[in-house]
Length: 277
Image (cartoon, rainbow, N blue to C red; front, side, top):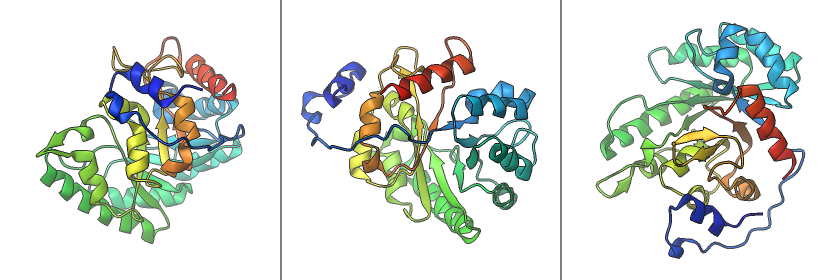
């Protein structure tokens, strides 16, 4: 297994002073359940969502996270049909990427109908790379979290790389973390974008233990700033999984946005990689 030092050396992100971390003995079970973010199969889902879900199930995925498309959050299926289709294939629709907008009440109602657990905001509801804007966003997230909680759902936010920019000496993502209530706003940490932003996922595991019940697990090509198959980029995936309990993760969604061949072949490669750890 690679060490944290190897991970940081490969990524070229940190000085030697940041490399010290206690050795944690957290075994990673071989039978862990993996999910997939449907954006990874976006073209197939738009063309024929039922057939695409059949293919996804055949790859061994057990959980589904949906995403927005020009046919809505469920790729043209009704929320109920989406949940039922996944269930019939031995999978569970556990989460969806959505927008926090003037249609959010309907979004909540659809999520309840689908039977999912999480609604994950996929982008900031207001623009502005400032501390003040991120504080305003945090308050909107707290309110959205309350609305979801009343309906038996959990609300969260998925990061990209820009949240890790700084303003007035403060990292904006940290502002968001410090001003959201952990019982109302459940963070989905995209490990790939954290690395692209020049940050260390382990730093966030330790600074905010238990705050990340969802992950997007994806390897990243640092030269081209794009996702790649597991083991071909800079993310130390074995180490991330070894320390997953520290983060509090319960749902791991594999996402790959770019491919060396096809989505199916890339995902087969990724699942085989995980099986062989």
